[in-house]
Length: 514
Image (cartoon, rainbow, N blue to C red; front, side):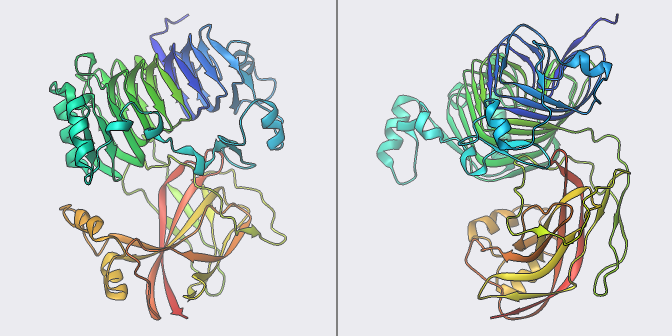
């Protein structure tokens, strides 16, 4: 029997702490490793968690090994057929129970999942997700920094915070995030113990990242509040870095309300949010990750956990193999012809909070819902000329996602920034947000987009008659007139609700009136 050389988990590679109300949606290949859909090796507590498994070469559907308390309402879904020998090996009292025959929300409630304040049941796609409006954690209520939280208008609070040694740092862009990591890694312990707040989404544009608190000597001990924002497109491939993640080593620190989207390769220990969480707290976080490595301790959200993690998720995907995608557009009089789209950038895209289904979608009459199983297939139909009513805010769209599609679809109506300025007099952003965008040397108003209308996720076999105009942050609106616009389609996998790595964009005409 080959010697096992490490630990791999869809959520955490090793856990001797507490993981509660968490889930992983994973595609793992783990050769000669102790591996599990949620946790590779568990000697701690895992309560009310589940894994949605698409795994190969693992030793447990939920956990790979260990004697921890994994029976506190933990389950796994798996793609193995009934009677499979592999399935028999995946499920036992230690490694969790397989979820099956779940027909409705009440079945889930009886399993112990809190459907009132934490979870919501989905009939399609990932079965259990967090209730969006309840998900973000109020850091101020529980934080030791509550009384020292600095505000620009509160000089007395600033002075008290300074005396107490509690700093507050607000991160607005990539440069500030790089500086933060550099200073903490160079030994600024006061900064590493501060309260840090993320003010914007940050795109690191595929650059090599050096983790915040890269090792135990400069561990992060403060509080990081992501405020629901995403840090995306960072990679760590440097062989010299042992702890790979946005954070390298967290020691008694706290991380909340943060989403990451990253690519990690190798290392002794790796995880999307943090490589090692030692006695710290991670809450309401998500990681969309691609992790590759021959040995070591590799987990979707964290590598090694001895602290507390709650209401967080990980989604893992393999992006090294790129298969062409074909999008077919059925002919419909006013509609478009067949379209083939290729991959532009081999990056993992943010998916971190699953997109809710559009409440206004309805089944297509007499449509058979039978998603195509032969590869990646999407079809869609909509009007080429869109009528926009300013008084109701509705855009008559007539969008259909036929039953043979195997993706959910989110629809956006967009202007380029340059066109938005010509039509509305601005991009719709606040002056501060636009200024920061224009400071980016890669910013191009002819290619950057402004969303003027957007849907929720539309299921296969469903249609949506109207899109809703988006309220622009600066209050500007689209005036009456005839304009060219762009329909932008974002595709989500049905079984995982992961965002696909390709999108489609198509020109349309819009007629705006009162």
